[in-house]
Each structure stands twice: as structure tokens, then as C-alpha cells.
Image (cartoon, rainbow, N blue to C red; front, side, top):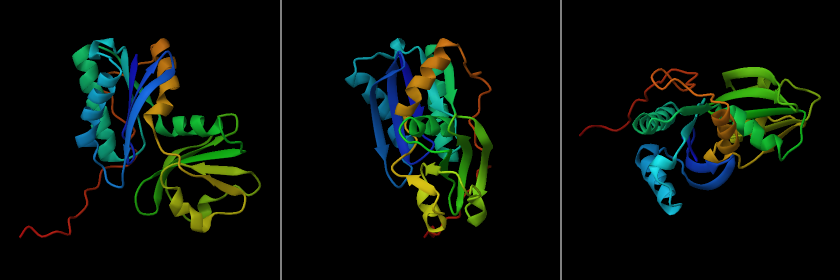
Length: 223
């Protein structure tokens, strides 16, 4: 039994997998980030309604990012805490990788571009071909006309943040809507990593932040 945790986006998602197959999940998606309030309660509810005890967990898988800095910290802290207390291993799954794996099973294209919102006109992204080979490595980029440099290929773009791409989209680019990071997408990959004992170092593991945290300035007065 593997617990999967995904908190890189607005979706707060937890799932249970057994033998690489999804058993159950709980997801809460909103415009704000309420992971700190929701995550632990959702984990306990997921275990309760499936009659699973904490001691039944064999490992915990966490979405590695890139994504929300705060969301990543909350997810990784919860995963590490469970692994330390239960003496079980930690598994890390790259967020853009499992977005690609999910979409490529359902949609046919020449080039696949998963994206995650990085606020303003920035996105976190990388590029895969139809065989799963990375054409471009993960980066934080500003969305402008230079981003759309594939001219002949049928390109599929998907993930949280695709709306900001629509005004600049060339004809050979298509958007796959309603695709966002979910713990359900981590179940198969986490089982493979568990079976091959591809674990993280609990003491030193850090998620894939990609960018440093920048605190916003509140517009509210104290009085």
C-alpha cells in the first residue's frame, strides 16, 4: 500500500495505490491554496474510509515539483513526517513527468508540453516527444511568441496555467483542457519506484523548487 501526495498546484490531492492500481483518492481544488488546512485531514479520511491503518503503508510518494513553493513545502513536510514516524521509505515523482505520462496515454501528438502556472506570465515547463524523450529540460519561462517555436509538429499543451497561452496559440498547437497535477497520476510510477527501491534520502531530500520563494507584499493595513 502506497500513499501518494500531490500539492504542487491549487489541487490538494491524496491517493492510495496497491500493486500500481488506484484504490481511492480525495481531491480538493480551489482558486486559493488551503493545503495546510486540508492535507492531513484528507489523509486521515482517506485511510479511514478504506479501513487502512498507518502501519499498512509501505512507502509514501510525494510530487517533487516544480510548482507552488508553499505547496511543495507542505506536501514534502507531511510525507517526510509520515516516513520518519513509520520508518518507511520516501518516493519522489517529477510532476511534469507524470502529467506527460497521463496525457500521452489518451492523446496523440508529435510534441507534448506540460505546463504549471508560475504566476504572472511565467510557467514551469519542459518538452517531450511522442516516445517520451525530453526535447527540452525543465525551466521557468515567460510566455511570449518565442515560446511557440515548433512550426510543423502537432503540439499538445496541457496542465495548470494553459489559459495564459491561448491568446498566442499558433494553429499547430492544441490545448488539452482540465489536466492538472493529481495524486491519482502518481500511483503507477510510485509502485515501480517502490519495487526497484528507488527511494529518497529522508534527511536531505528537497523538492524541485526551480525558483526561489518571493514573498508578496500585503495590500492590507494593520489598522
